Structures are given as C-alpha cells and as structure tokens.
Image (cartoon, rainbow, N blue to C red; front, side, top):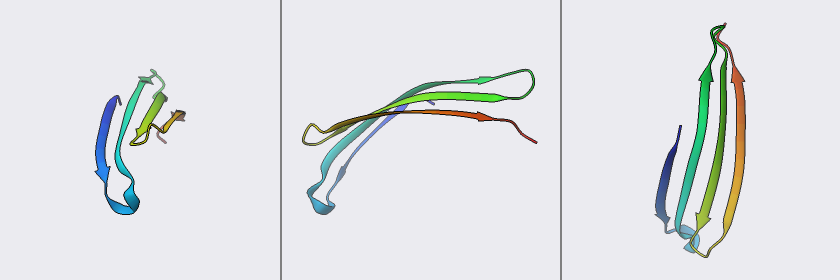
Length: 60
C-alpha cells in the first residue's frame, strides 16, 4: 500500500507533480479486510493537498 509517484504533465502547463501514500491493511480471522491510508500531493507551484481513505471488505 505505501508508495510514491512523480512525473511531468506537459499539457496545459501543469509541470511537475508528486504524491506520497502510506497506510495499513489488516485481515481478520473472519476474512474481513480493513484498509486505512493517507495521501499527500505536491504540485509544481507549491500547491499541496492531502486526503484519507478507509475501506472495509469481505468476500462472499
């Protein structure tokens, strides 16, 4: 789940960007999967954004 990405977007003068993702995933004995993650983005002109994500899943 953790990772990073970066690149350059030439369309519309967007320029460089980067993202950093970190989180945790847990599987229970009853086959429930619990995931929690945080995301942080940085744009070329110093624009920043952050977010969070949580999910619960169980196969059927």
